[in-house]
Amino acid sequence: MRRPLRLLCAAVCLALALAGCGQPLPEPTPTAEPEPTPTQAPRSLRFSLGYDPAALLHPITGDSQVNQELTGLVYQGLYELDNAFQPQPVLAASGAPSQDGYSWTFTLKAGALFSDGSPLTAQHAAASLNAARTSALYAARLSGVTSVSAADELTLVVTLSAPNGSLPALLDIPVVQEQEQGPPLGSGPYRYESSGERLFLQANPNHPSAAALPYATIPLTAVSDAAQRIAAFDSGEITAVTTDFSSPYALGYASSYETCDYPTTSLLYVGFRAAQGPCQSELVRRAFSQVLDREELVRLLLSGHGDAAALPVSPLCGQYDETAAQALRFDLESAEALLEEAGYVKNEEDGLLYYRRTPLAVTILVNSDNDTRQAVAGQLAQALSQLGVTVTVNRLPWNDYTAALSRGQFDLYIGEVRLPGDFDPSALLTGSLNYGGYENWELTQALWAWRAAQGQEKTQAAQALWQLFAQDAPIAPLCFKRGSLLVRWGLASNLQPTRANPFYRMEEWTTAANP
Image (cartoon, rainbow, N blue to C red; front, top):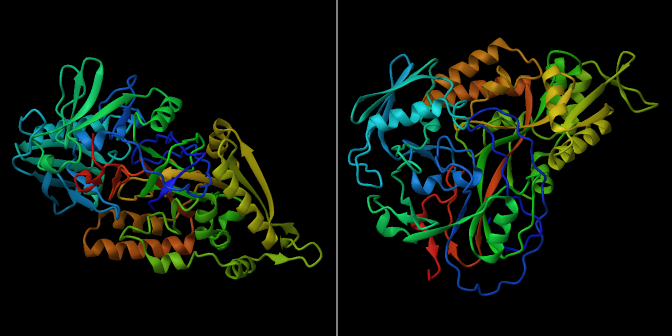
């Protein structure tokens, strides 16, 4: 989606979760998109970005979302994920698992250089990945890695605690060369430079695309908080930002800009207490999975900034099984039939569902500081009530909400999780985020088989896994959210942002004259 906008509300602070992990995010509030204003010829602006001077510029140990947005311009990983979530080799020339799947050997491309002209080696890659294993940003996604070592200058060996046929999808982690002072060196298209107190990005002459870059220099403006970032964008001091249109921290931009969405791995879903209560029955869980129109939810509550999904894998990914997803599609008649099969009968007098003399009553847990989740909870409650379910919505502040999740004080809850690049849902189904106590040994084995498989076997394993998922409905995925890159109107086109790199393939941008 690419058009000029004049929005009163746009999000500026993406909730930073552990990348590749399953931490539930204190999620966002959808903001409506007003109609575009008439296009005006832009005044002369220079492409410029913001940074947080109070936070580290280190791409592995830094914790600033603003600074992380610069990572793709300065650093490269072994791989990068495209918008179909396929790992594309960058510094890696090849990668292959061992016969038992417990290790991978990667060969680096010969001739890769850091921005100072020094050679990039497997030793640098090993040091970077080992640092990432203990970092807040990457530790969760690399939890299955037991060791990383360099066999020689161009050969890297990664050892795993269990086979993972999709390991390259997790290795878009920056490879760096540490320095005594300042941010580490990278091998990306730009490098950090300074002049006095001014910081800027300078084209890296040692990068293959240096000659094709649209900007030789990109000034960086210090923006310590959201208000400063908005003011700098509106004034033209910075001309590009990323945002989450459903963020609860939404603040208003007033300048004209065009927006380009990119898919993410942030899953909005309904969780079930499978260990106790009505949701012990897979028939009830399947029925509840069918009561929400996912496409309508994305259109109304996320203003279109999302991808409806009935499975915990993006529909843009090749591992999404449409046949399995169709079994969980919006279908109120099917939901009624499933509840009847589970033994619930509607009382003609009050219109409520009963199992013998006990009404079908559920509590939906949602955090009160998130308008999007509350809206989803409201729509879910309304849909269930129409079926004859007695519904209570329990709205709690974030800390109380997470405490209630941990104690299992819910029948259903509205949650969000940022999945890793390989879409491994283990944390939700068998791990730390399995708040509902779900257990199914057959599905767990299918999950392990899917994780270990690769190639054509991966597709077959995915079909088997998602068919079991559709039969048992351990959770009800709703959609994957989209992020957005905002660029001042008329400054650049052919934007190709991705989840990890808003400035992906910047050398292919079409740009206005740069003063």
